[in-house]
Image (cartoon, rainbow, N blue to C red):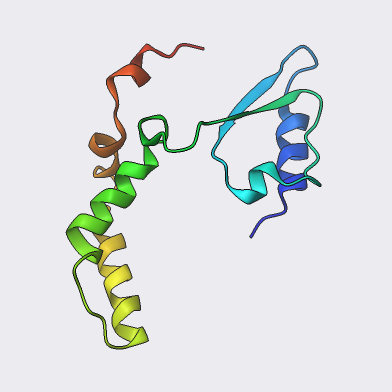
Length: 110
C-alpha cells in the first residue's frame, strides 16, 4: 500500500504555481480518512455511492466476475489463486478499453 500523503504531495509538486488539480475518488476509507493531508492546490471530488457509471473500472470487475470468477467452488487456496491469475490474464491490453469506454467520457475536455 502506498503512502497517500506522499502521493498527494508528489502530485502537488508537479503542478505549476497557477494550476489546481481536481481528483475524482470513490468513497474508499483511504480517500476520506480524517488524517489525510491534501495540499492546497489539490481538491478531492468524491463520487456518489453506488454510481458505477461514474467509475469505469467497475465494468472491468464485472467482466472478471461474470466470465471468470463467479459460480465456482474453489476447494483450495491455490485454486483461488489460479482462478485469479487466469482472470487477470484475460485482461489483454486491448480488453479494458471497450469495457471502460462510456460515450460521455469523450465529451470531457481539459
